[in-house]
Image (cartoon, rainbow, N blue to C red; front, side, top):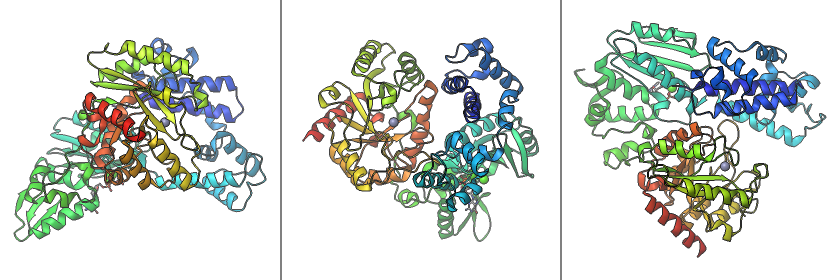
Length: 579
Ligand code: DGT
Ligand code: CA
Ligand code: CA
Ligand code: ZN
């Protein structure tokens, strides 16, 4: 089920932004921002809390709790927020969404130049009208153009996590309709693509009518785009498009195979069918000549009749999976159940929301056999990390170790890779950690040569075990850094440094194609949540999906290994890089 926490967090953050740009009470804006973060990261489903329960969330006071409770019970945006929205022209809110612009500059553009849409902004930039404004320059223009290009490239596609939330909810709701013989999502979502155009839901049932009716009547259906006996499309209150198709139960496998795609994969499977003098469609596999049906009930049977093993959906991208399947050489993909621990997580000692003990308890509840705490290091100045603080944390980690069944705790840190590839602490100090992740958090615009050298130097640091979110991209917001990643992958393999697959849904970094490339160098990977709150530990799911799209097996993933093998990898990495 989707969590209303994110929904409310977004609303409160929006109000904080609106306050900030209208020159409202800065203290109040900060209070709303703080509450937004706390609610977004709160482990319990806030829809189940009353005002009293809401007040227990740190940073949530009486007035915010009342508004949230009213919103949750009525579904109506609080009048205060509606009023603040109304005070800002709609076009300016569109501008605020541009990552490099932000609320203040958006309002300024509107007031000074009358700009109130993205198109008008592009026009103003091309006429060089921004140059004379205070706080704007050529560099700002470049950044804005870049952000707009990224937003337009994402082109209305949504993040995997948002689509997954909505799909889980629809599948649960339709599964309860009497007569449901099967219900699941297909399309790019089943393939775990990083962004999703629309959500494709399939139901198996004799009679489609009750499902189409239930679908149109869902409380979060805002608009019915098209409806028919076989297919209905709706738009949700959050603007996502969902297609529902109801299939006769005996063609479930054929429909599931067809609507899972990808289109390129389907073209390949149909070619193979033709070579076997068969015809493959969403209704089944048929003899081409006689039209007699061979099979249609399960995907396994369909693939088997084409001479193929069942192909896991994340591989269905026409990247060689058919050829590998014909040779019976498909990888045995790493699965979420194979993950034994998380190696990149934060606590409230830096920018996380939950205390150490809560993060550890939540990790144990996921059944992990080990768990690393990796708070930020001192060079990220706003995190105010010190030697004393991290050493005190180490004591607390050691004290908690073994307190949750057999789960072992590793004490680590997320280092910052500085402009020259240096990291926050000297070797003697780093030697005291069980494991160090190192990531780029600044100076994204260096030359390709400098960025490449910088990452390689980090790999060559004996104490750096994992390169965190290696490209630093944010999907739809920031492109990755321009480094020679082939050289970086080679350095990782040489020095025994793992590359992270960061499971945060707006990172998914490395991405599938980079993973495939890196694997050819013999690199190992760590799939991490980078959790800043207990619910974020579940982002592991998206990291694993991305790893599957990169064809990874258990053997490629260091946190799918038993602790002993992981420790050996860490030890050997320190020895190898030092040589
Ligand atoms: P999306 O929605 O853009 O994230 O990507 P998909 O892959 O979910 O694409 P979508 O929703 O247009 O269609 C779902 C699946 O249905 C697609 O992966 C394969 C199948 N499909 C749709 N149209 C065609 C087509 O014209 N030819 C073939 N072979 N398959 C199609
Ligand atoms: Ca789709
Ligand atoms: Ca679709
Ligand atoms: Zn980071």
